[in-house]
Length: 518
Image 1 (cartoon, helix red, strand yellow):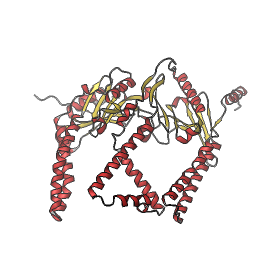
Image 2: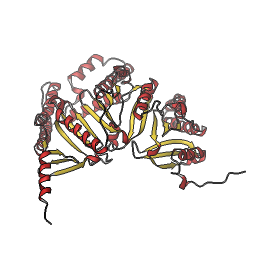
Image 3: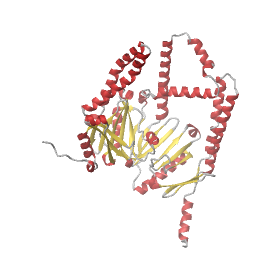
Image 4: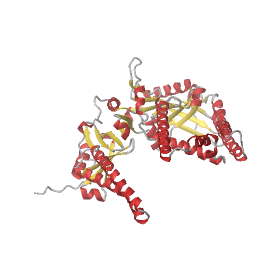
């Protein structure tokens, strides 16, 4: 078969119009900066040990340094071998020397173009661009360019947006239109400490430092700072030392949570930069820019962790397809930091394009009293499981543990019953226009509004206890968000009626109708 000369000429002109690009040379400086990590660690260890460096410390330092040099070398090879090109219908990426990789993503399959820059990248004016296709697998069909200049990354994202809109027949938002949905208000900082992750992070950090020093054959308890604290406060009562230690941990946790909020949500802005697209920009040290196509938006979820709920706050997440695997979805679906509940509902309504958020609790139907009995029984089981070991050991060893057991049960009983009633009050469901709304949870109350036309199936589960109580859990399956949104502990008749009302006919082939009894 002979080739057409005109076709060959057109292909050559097309390749000439779309030249191959490369990563920015400043990425080499970023790679060299990796070596500074082991040097800083070695210097800090030398200071903590008072200048005494043993063989184990030198071996650990050398191993760490060699590892960082290898990582730097691999990154340098990526800088040398990576090439990319954007044509009228696809994005192409070639990289590798010994193991070559060639990827091509059609423009029609691109779902979002995200930008991320860590502190080192920002120092040298670089950023990472990730093209996502919406594949759920972690090795999805997208591609990433790590080490573009900010100007090149913005230009590439703009060009990809223009190509996608041209193929979809859409237009970008007018330049004089205010497309901002929400911006950072530093008054939200009051919600930052209302999380347990700050206190947990203290224990994680202390454990990591202890393990690192232990691997270097350095006993943390023998350090000069620890010895000085022991000398100063070694004579205080044990109970006083425990209280002070807990207070210090809580204060450090609060400071850590606040710092995490500032770093993660500094510069936050939620807007519509173009028609049919939501964009979240946030980050103080590590900047992130995440885009979500509105045509892939299937709803929203308003999450209220317990402490945040008591303070009248909430977070909003997008229920959307094409946000990657479970970990990526959890990070990229965040639309807001902790904000006042009223504002969270307003943002949810604005994102969904309505005047009133379907997550408003006013229209949610309550669940049967049998659901309350289930939660009370579950609370009683937890009280027994916690108190029973003390009583059992007390009968075997000493009566003091028996008293500890019944006192523990006496203290836990009202607390667990209060949580059981709260969990029941938080149950609710409704069909709100084009959305199925479901709410559940006590430690984290979640109210999800999912588009009814996005529900692709139903799952019905009934445990032994649910069957005895005449209840079931109805799960709405959708190709977005967590995948299944459940209406928990609803009566059988009400659950089946809800499924039929939300998506008529979808569950009908699996329902056996019985004539009404007279």
